Structures are given as C-alpha cells and as structure tokens.
Image (tube, rainbow, N blue to C red; front, side, top):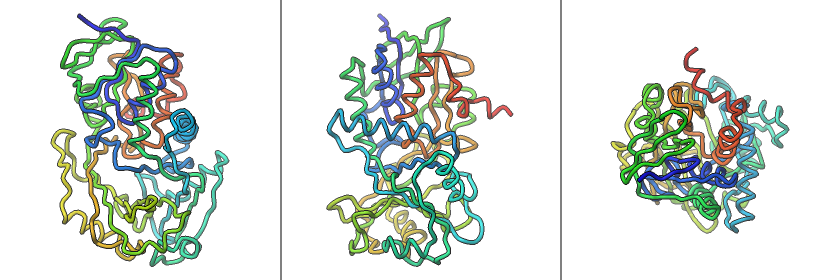
Length: 389
C-alpha cells in the first residue's frame, strides 16, 4: 500500500533538511528519506564548521540566498536555543601580483568586494600588511596581498543546523525516515512516485537533494554533468594559541595562481587548541559509495607542508583529527536548482560544487516558494538550460 505526501524530500543533509523545514512551515505534508541517519559524516554536510559570508565571490546571484540563510539561522537560534552561526568575520586573501582563482573565478577578492558594494554588505579592503598587524595568526605575508574582510561573516555549525531544521520540520508534522534508501524516482501524469527499500510513496512533488548519490536517481542529463570529488579536512594541534584573539576570523587564502593553490580555515573553537584547515582537489573523481573516508597520515603531512607551514602561527604537525567529505561538482562550479527536464514534478538540488552550505537555508526557502507558487524566476540563474548553450 502506497503512502501519499505533498512533498517527498530525498536526502536530508544541508539542502534536504532546509527543504523539509520550509515546506513543513508552509503546511505541506512532507515525507523525508535519508539512507543514513542525519546529520552524518558520509556526505557533504559534516566537519564541525562551514564558512559563511554574504559577499559571495562566486557571483551576485548567490547573495540573496546566503542573506536569507543568515536570517533563517538567527530565527532558528531564537526558536531552538541552539548556537548555529558565529559571526567572527571572514578574510579573503590573494597575492598582490599575478593571477589567482577560486572556484573557477579569477580575481576572487575583487569579485567579493564588488558583490559587497552592490548589495551594501559591510566590509573592509586591506593589504597583507594590514592583516599582519591586525591578525597575527597569519604569518609570512608579503605585505602587498589583496584582502577582503567581512566582519558579519563567519561560520555555521553544519550538524547543528541540520539537526535544528529536521527537529523543526518534525515538530511541524513532517515524517522523517532515516536508514531508508530511495531506489528510484519516476513521474506518472501529474504525480511523482518514489520507490524506497520499504515501499512506494506517491507525491505531488519530489525534491532530490541527495548530493553525491543524486546522479544515480536523476539519470540524464545529471549523470553527465555531476562529478564527485573527495575532499579532506584536517585539524592540526596548536602548540601556541597566543596569536588567536577572540576576534580571529575565518579565512580563504589564495597563495598561487590556480584553484588548488589555496587553503581555507577556521579559528580555534573556544577551549579547543586545534585549527581546522583544508584545500580542494578536482583532478580525481570518485563516487559516493566508492570514496575512501579514511585519511592517511601522508595526506595530512602534505597538507601541512604545502599549505600550512609558515602561514599559520602555532599550527604544529600533530594531526588532532582528519575527515573526508565529498563535493558534487558541475562543469561551471555553479549550483543546479531546477526541475528535471523529463519530470516536471521532480526538483533537483545538486550539485552545490563545494560552496553550498552557507546558502542551504535560503535555498530551502526559495525552493519551497518556487514549488508552491510556480514562479521559478528567482532561481533561473541555477537552471539546467545554461549547459545547453
């Protein structure tokens, strides 16, 4: 016997949790499925902290989404009593001379500054010399670096954000089922049918927010557009925390010309003598199921040698923790938020190409509004049609 719902959400990570919450807020009958038990460490939405900033160098189209997310995090904090968002500030740094790139976008500092000016985001522009004086945790700066600083940015706690939205969705009547694998999604006339490992659900709409597993469910053209890349997070022990003041910011530091010549990181959490850092790689593709989730000592040693040594005060070679996660990436490093071209009742939210969490709460709100009202114009920049040009 089939179950029925207004909306089925497949995958309850960053995007799925946001969608389940926002549809439930609108009074929809929501059923959500996840093949694991979210929040979990098997996808893209874990690792203690995620960067957030409003002036998004990836493009002005993202700014309304992240601005909405900041509002929603604060609303959820008030509703749940949980700390979700820490506005410690964000630094974006690039060499003063020569080329640099981040997420496929050249001159990322200038793009961030332009977005801040266009949307009235409070910010400062600095040089590396300014940074060295103000934030002594950054060492061996040349002095002429181009720097964007956004005091209202910072980091969110991804596991807490997912938990809070799932809890609110459930309180509003959503039925959320963990450890339930979705095997297929199809459409018959004006209804969508979701086949799970324990039966079928008939729905008005299906939101597929399955990250690295999305292409398997969605088929063409997603199977040729989405690539899964393994990424690694490292926590190095700090043998000296004196350089990390209470206002120590999150940072994105481009120190060379290409997308992989950079690191990003976070200040130590209160009472925690570790610094979390990472870089990105896009050369080795994998799958969500085949990806190795073990991080070798050699990987951490290379991260420290290539990116951390000489740049972060007090960061020892001692690895306090390491974890692997996955990015699901499109050819242009942009999001896909659109209806399936062969199934208009099926909405895909993937891939977010490694910069999605900061936008997730706003995406949930925007998708719920689009499905409910039928107006997709606000999400047009993330449509599939751009890949046909």
